[in-house]
Image (cartoon, rainbow, N blue to C red; front, side, top):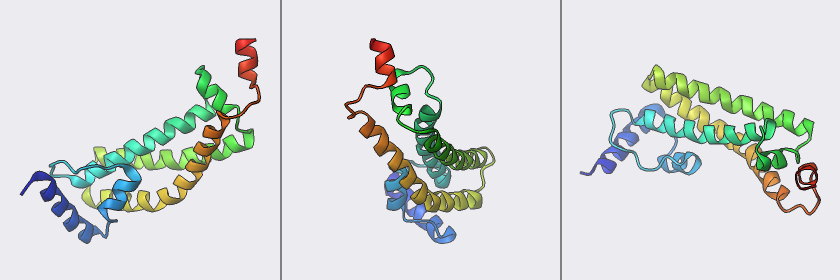
Length: 156
């Protein structure tokens, strides 16, 4: 039996033991991909969840604190201070999960990893909706015909 099949079998055992979500659902939400051969398949999954959350965190930080990147500054100016406060609250929730995942990676425990996977999976459904709304606003900012303060000062 191949490594991937063996890992899928291992996950099914862990899924039953810890009442975990379907692997396909985890993969859909967190881009887990194929489970490589390892003695710690749940650690692989928590690391993939952490990677996804890290990507989200970077996007949110670029809105709140765009540094001197022109594209980030342009996107950030499309959000009001009130919206940025809400984005910060979302960032706090996601950062909390990231730290939980990081702690589990360093002090790995299968039962704790399973709890984190379930918790992140459930809470991500709600957090993802907020994040998608932010992404939609960012995308639409690039279609605006109005001149931004940045364009006026940068090209003026």
